[in-house]
Image (tube, rainbow, N blue to C red; front, top):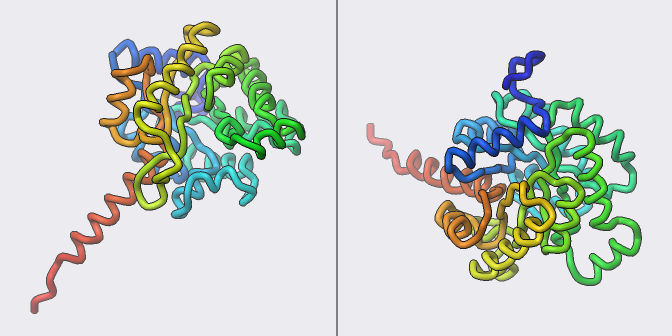
Length: 287
């Protein structure tokens, strides 16, 4: 389904993206979605066969050597960073994989209908709600909700994107949020169970067990099934880090696949660069 104007795939319609994911499931393959913070990551993740790419601001921090949670902080304009990565790094190099833009839906400075129009015109095939307040809890979450920067703003953004024929893939932290997003028309729901473990900047103590990840993922899926059984169900984060971890989730829940950002992009770079450098340094200089 190449775009006749560019010779490349993007942008796709919402239904075209759904059809691609449906074919993956028809082929009895798991759906694999990857975050990409650089063009070279996007290029080689596509070569590996990922089904979708998501571009969000945390990718820039992650690939600069910082924790992905930096994307939740006021270290830059999240919406502008995602657009910049998409325009200048990712969209010019991918061949035909659909590319999704991470949108900070509660940004009070944006006229969201206008911004989503820019996202669509840029060539993105859909949107994701990141940064997302669904992974914030406690007193600070209450303050955000009470001062107009609520999760409901993300729901409204997704509903607007749905009506603009953009594919929508959303992060949620609990069943109630999942049902809100499903009612808003979300095509794919990602059960976010926490910051990814492992590697140089992954969390250690601030995460859940695999059993908890299984239970939380399935409870989110069950909530969505009641509202929209045609939703694609995906898992992300916490102890779900390796292909073996994802296999457990696929066996013990009704998830259709996995979203990996640190798990695919950062982990791949960390170990491969370390091993390759060590291989070069093992060479002797004998003359």
